[in-house]
Image (cartoon, rainbow, N blue to C red; front, side):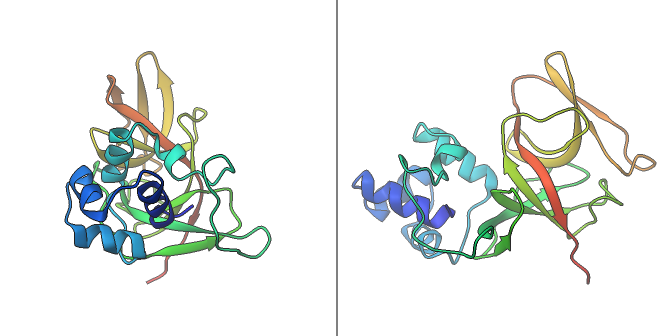
Length: 199
């Protein structure tokens, strides 16, 4: 389910106006209108904070299971349309940027996509590539994941350690492993594939 579909469904089921939803999200009514039309997609960190404020996870909010709501659009067998929610840092952590109505058709097991900014995952994932992400709260050691650190997202290989993670870059000559401890760490999903964007 796209963010636009989920937002409309949530607002209608909870009998809220666009003005009321704008207050919850801390944006203008015009922004809500653009979100619902699909012309604009909010920052990934804003989506996380919004779903948290209404008592849901991002996974629950965007779910297309029967008990939550089905997406009306029909796509070819084995193909689905996933939103590009913003950008993720491959290098220094960074906030996810706004994207305007960008979507990707894929047959990959992925729920959303993020444009990669930075060269720390080269040659596996280059700057500007699109990472396809499967929503999950954990992954195996050595897998590439999107990790949220205090509302900033980064794309790295992960290794678990007690009470934390080691974030590892494929561009090891330029970027050293980073050890992260604390409760503010959250794995948003596992990168299942990257799409090379030639310029």
